[in-house]
Amino acid sequence: MTSRPLLLANAHLVDPSTGREGRGAVLIRDGVIEDVAWGENPAAPAGAQVIDGRGLHLAPGLVDMRAFVGEPGAEHRETLKSASEAAAAGGVTTIVSMPDTNPIVDDPAIVDFLLRRARDTSRVNIHPAAAITRRLEGREMTELGLLQEAGAVAFTDGAHAIASAGVMRRALTYARDLGALLMPHLAEASLVGGGVMNEGELASRLGLAGIPREAETVMLERDLRLVRLTGARYHAAMVSCADSVDIIRHAKADGLPVTCGVSVNNLALNENDVGHYRTFCKLSPPLRHEDDRQAVIEALAEGVIDVVVSDHNPQDVETKRLPFAEAADGAIGLETLLSASLRLVQDGRLALPALLRALSSRPAEILGLSAGRLARGAPADLILLDPDEPYLLDKRDLRSRSKNSPFDEARLAGRVRRTIVAGRIVHDLDEAAPARAA
Image 1 (tube, one colour):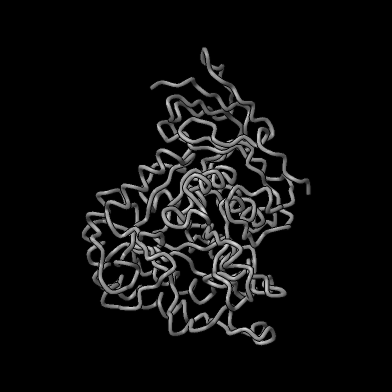
Image 2 (image 1 turned 135 degrees about the horizontal axis):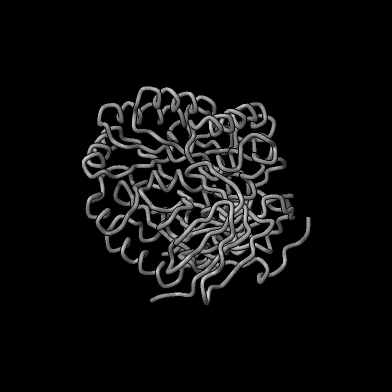
């Protein structure tokens, strides 16, 4: 089916795949980018819809490699539809959904269900990640090949770490032969123990059990030795501390096929944000010391850390309105991923093209997707962004079914005015309910 052409004119273009930026226009036809006009504004084709992007930045939509979606099994927390609405509002045009559902995504039929359900209800692209082990128990491998054929874009046990080195070695060996990507969570269970926040002086003063950095680094060191043994592609889902950064840096210097991500929460917040037992800041990995936050920011700027993820994990009031030690881990993040990340640009720590590379083109490259580019023939998954527009985040304005945002009542800057997926406008801030002014 052909569609009406769409011309996005007079915008400031940002192509994170090349680092190029400047004035120009983009012409969209039939769901793909037909032309990118740098330094000019061509005449609109006959019958085209024209959007004036004056004063706005035009960039590829974000690709979020780690988002938990309740459907199937926990639709009271989130559905594919509500997650996609939240994503569109935040400029996320592609989501990789985690397998921690009920039933678990460890069977090709569940992958097929998610793809069909997303096709019917989602405003954005949703690619399921399948489980590495059956029932996420860390003992028996899933059928990686069949899951990949069904449409799984990567493999992870979600918030569950794989304790057995033997199972991880087998999974890496099979993944190597299939050309598949493993992206495990890093949390050594016996070191995490009953810990609920970063181990240190603050945890002691709050009377809370701490989680040492070694719970992350021990697993990372083990996995990278197995990567060296097998030669498989490996993506550390989230690193959170300076020691992990050093480990990844050395692995890359040695030529290992390794990439890694960081949660926007660990870039923008530190352990002090736990404050007076704020359960919206109870996360896995936990918010770390400010020295660790600075280390991951520097690693992102250096390119040691490849991608930034939302780690979107909706929780309802029954699991968050509890004493801190008893509350569930997790925070929503699809709608605030870009705004919270833009703090790094506003602070002069990162250039906008470099940030957008970590949010769009680099995750697309790692996943083997064609997204994240301003180029002819690329998918017309785009955002029109005002990177300086301030606003006050009010959880009542959030599209997600759950409201557990660690940025609730925070002053943020950077609003997505429009989100376009396959050439279709899926979010228009001017038509949405007005946000509260900063």
